[in-house]
Image (cartoon, rainbow, N blue to C red):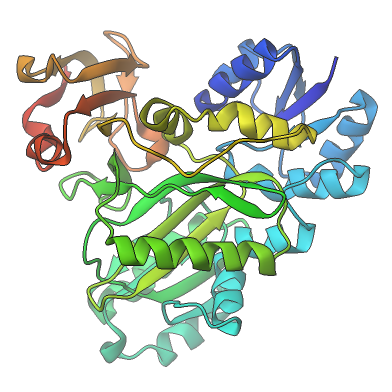
Length: 401
């Protein structure tokens, strides 16, 4: 029986565990939080921090694993690459390439060096705060300040005036393990930005998807994604351009077979930007949504990639209707009472995945980790979808006691 080591124990690993077990694979999970929900579904759990590369390597050797993944768990991606390289296991790509993809500062520098469209940016460490502030010009506004090595929109802040800069820097540093932050030109979107999952096979991006990623400006953190829909409204010309540029990037980095969470943006200037590419599945159940919308099981394919199994007959996505995923969350902390959904959506509801029950304490939606569930909807066309998604909080309420 093949052994697969999954790093982390978040809820988003549960479908990965179940899929691997259906394939006859022995699934092992590890992190330093034994109460994480996914561990109760795996075949075996070990209390080892996923950011301790050497400790995970020792564990992987002891267990004699056949593959390792960090699906939807950003902190474990470089560890998985490190262990794969040291043990000569199947990997997404070279360790050095994955270090570039996982660090926003290194990634921006790589894109600029190889003539990709890239926002202007500067990267600083915690010792350079004074330099960052003194170098900053009001003409640079607005900008985005964020940690170079954090995920889930934690520590991300848009700066509209110079007085906000130091506050944003301190917030970014508080979420950066390396105490490093990036100040980046804010790219005004022409349409929705895209955050979706894709797949390469032997260095060829056989499956590239784009979404409409949405944000709730009324939520406690307006930079935390609150809903998604497929297909994307990015122009066809820019989708073609982005596919070519993403393929060029994958080849330059000598990537192999892997799932990717990819963020791109079409700007008001007409240009298309690659914002982030991470060799892991995305959070917020993106791969599960794509399985529903395109009938391509990216989760099982990513497992095959991690174990070096053959992947064949994968084509670009074709969407069966218009699909939406709404993240369920609360504007404030309190005791959960109930979720109410307008009956007008009854015919569109495909799935209600609620993670809390009456009386549970929930927090305000300050980051992706504060979500309390998801709602999956299907529509005949994008016009009907937009009627709901343009103001979905009218139809969906999280009520507190």
